[in-house]
Length: 323
Image (tube, rainbow, N blue to C red; front, side):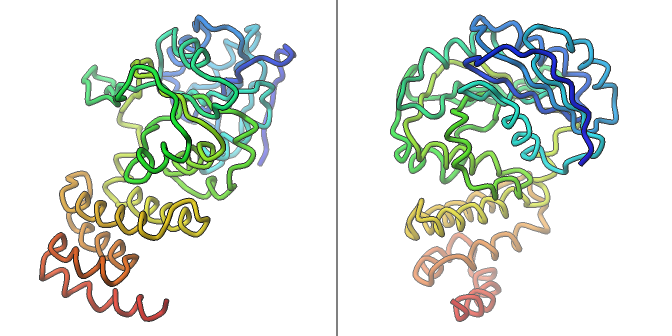
């Protein structure tokens, strides 16, 4: 892939490297970059990546070319196809011990980095705060929450309790992680369109403790260019979640029993998820059912309903016989 790169600053060994991967978010970029540069914690560098945007993102990014905190600006001449490849590129340029992927359409409080960096210790590999999900029109949708204002959790406990049924770190902008831990993550995360970050957080958490701040310091923006809505409608996020569960089991990160229990709960969620196209719901349910062991499949038939249970019975048995 052809790129055009500018190395702006050679500051040595900042504590945090902030990677801002952008694609067609010109209208949000200034607020994003300024909210990073305005952090109370100032021991960081900024790496800005543009994935061949078709709007005027380059003009906005170029205005920061000589800012003392900006160490690299990279413009792709071709689109990479996934933001996760941009993550890899940005982290490869990073000099910091910690990485913050500051998504280009989000923004944050000036205390985000200070709060998270105060919370980390030698055993910590990932730290996160809470996010408020807000639309560009100002409508507040919901926010993540924590049981405590401040806590450190064993990585394996965090995965079992917070990362199987759903992704507690809903947005990369709400966390920082150790660069060293990232390089031990399975590279298959770049093959995902939407759930690659989920795999990254799990595999990093396996390597140590997780720090959680209960403070809402990150603003996760929803807008018309946001691709997650379409991914839900087409069932892509569900299919990638199923793929993730199978991968975790294959790597012995979770047990077969844990996977089965999550799949049964997800089938229930699919049935009531209004974001998914109605014509796809039954097909997605059947795909989940095909990954159940027979006892779980039979006991959970009430979730599917007798009619759809019978309809899915043949593909389940056909799939089960191949195991």
